Structures are given as structure tokens and as C-alpha cells.
Length: 366
Ligand code: NAD
Ligand code: GLY
Image (cartoon, rainbow, N blue to C red):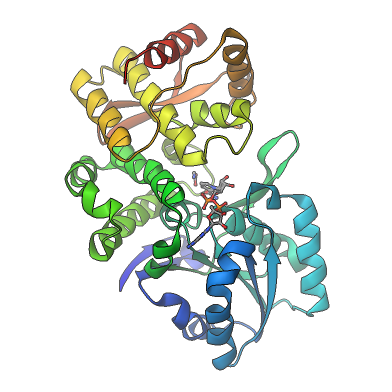
């Protein structure tokens, strides 16, 4: 088993990475000295596959679990589902010492984490991420929340889990498209922080796409180390943590104008990162060689690297970028790359330049 620790004083916690961890859930929770009552929050797809094992593991180690199953998909990240969860927690009489297990992808993690942050003014929660994206990104760092009609993640909190269990066996059942989308965040860590990881991904991509457990375990652990390092220095995103948003300003806007669901998050930020690499070449001196390696790696991972926009869509894209949470004083700030492994944040970029880069990559053949 690989263990990464997130250092946040008395809110520090471990991320454990290994196969078979759902069967160890009860034993791992017992170590945290939590109350007996708990609730597993999961979705229909994940629940069907893994809820029984999680439930049995908790029950046989002396806990009294209840199961809350929400619909699969982004629409479950809503205040309506939060209300349903509160009602079920109250019906099961969860107390201050009780805890929640978030069993699922980023949707369940963000939702269940927000419920935990707010029910009885905060009860403990444990993340059991079951998508690649959730294992390397959303389950770590304490950003929890739900969507409003006005936009994604507009209601939320910073609320850290007590433990993260990345069970690598859950990768086996993850649909191919979801698995590949998770790679957009994996590649991001190489670009923003670790040139050696980037080179390792270039080398080991075929093994990773085959989901070879040892290679995957090492990469998941390295991504978690990087995220922990960043979050440990800047938990509430006053500076450094912004680097985790590389490619996300354009990516979120693409998700928004295409209607959530057309592009998976990872697919949209793949295009966003390729476009941001191109911007970085013009503004930060990122070499053509590095920009090409970035584009090639996303392509090899089976992710989209370009989008063709009609004039009306382009206008919508700019409007969506201006609504991004990262806009400050009306200015869109970008994370730009100097070279693979080194980025700078808080960079102003002129709108016309973003437009011409999107046109340029959109018109590229292949
Ligand atoms: P998701 O949670 O919707 O999961 C994707 C799909 O895969 C769902 O249909 C789910 O039911 C299914 N699934 C999950 N695990 C499975 C498994 N092991 N086998 C079979 N099917 C499985 O999507 P996601 O990509 O994991 O997360 C996206 C969400 O994460 C978005 O809401 C995004 O905003 C959020 N996010 C949060 C953070 C953060 O820091 N909190 C970071 C990145 C993304
Ligand atoms: N996924 C971005 C962050 O956690 O800050």
C-alpha cells in the first residue's frame, strides 16, 4: 500500500492507495475513533457495484451504517439532493460524532463532502473515490460543494476529509471514456509541477491506458503527493493553489457553452490546457517543443485537443470565462507555463489573443 499524507496541522490526513481497500473500510474507519453511526453516500452506478462491500465492511467492524443512493451524474450535485441527504441523515439519527463515507466519483465526493461540512455544523467524512479523476484530484484538498443554476460549484466550503481510500480495484469497472478523461488531470500535474512525471507519462502511457495496477498506483500516488504539497502550502487558494486550475478557465467555459454533458470535464480541460500551452508560447516563452509534447500527450491519451467555434459560440465562450470564479475585479487571470514542470499564476491575457489561439488550434488539421 502507498500512503501520502496531507499536512494541515490538526486537520492532516492520510491518502491510502492500494487494491482491495473498500474491504478494509471498516478497519480503517475504526482507527479514526469515530462514532458508530454512519452513512454511505453513493450513486446508482457505483452503489450497484461497491456499496455492499463497503456496507459489510463497516457493519462487521461494529459500525451502524445506512445507505443513501443518489442518481448518477452532475445533476445530483444540487441543493435539492443536499436536502434529501439531510432528511435521510436525520431519519437515521446521525449525531455529532457520526460520519459520512463518500463512495463514488467527484460528483458524490463534492456532494457528500458538502453535506458533511454542513450537517450539525460539520461531521467527519471519509472519501472513497472510484474514478481516476476523483482519486488524483477531487477527493484530496477539501473543496466540496454543489452547483446552482447560475453555475458550477457556486455553493461550497473548504472542508477536509479525515481519510482518503483510493481502492485501485474500482478502476477496473470505470467506463473507458471516464478513465481517459481522468488523464487530463494526471497530465496537468506533470505540466504544472513535475517534468519527470510528464516524461514518465509519455513513456508509460500504453501501460497506464491498459490500467496496469503497479504503474497506475505509482502515478496516482505521485499526483496525490503533488496535490497534497500544493494544498499543504495554500489550503484556501490565496495564491499557489491556483496552479491546479491550469487550462480550467477555458475548459470550464467550453463545458458551459456546450451544455454540461457534451464534453466530460477532463475532455474540456484537455482542450483548455492545449490552448493555454499555446498562449504560454506567445506570452511566457514556452518552447514550441514543450507545447507540441503537451498536445501530443493529450492526443495519445485519446482526449480532444481542439474545438471549432462559430462566432456566436465564441462570444458565449468569452461571456462564460468572465463568469468564472477565478475572475477578480472583472479580469480573467490565467495560469501559464514557462516550461513543462513550471508555471506561473495570476497572468492577465488579452481576450483577442485567446480568440486567435482558439481559432488557430481549431483550424489545425488533425
Ligand atoms: P462522476 O462522479 O460523475 O463519475 C463519472 C461516472 O462514472 C458516473 O456516471 C459514475 O456513476 C460512474 N462511476 C464512478 N466510479 C465508477 C466505477 N468505479 N465504475 C463504474 N462507474 C463508475 O464524475 P467525476 O469525473 O469523477 O467527477 C466530476 C465532478 O468532480 C464534477 O462535478 C467536478 O466539478 C468535480 N471536481 C471537483 C474537484 C474538487 O477539487 N473538489 C476537482 C475536480 C473535479
Ligand atoms: N481541483 C482544483 C483544486 O482542488 O483546487
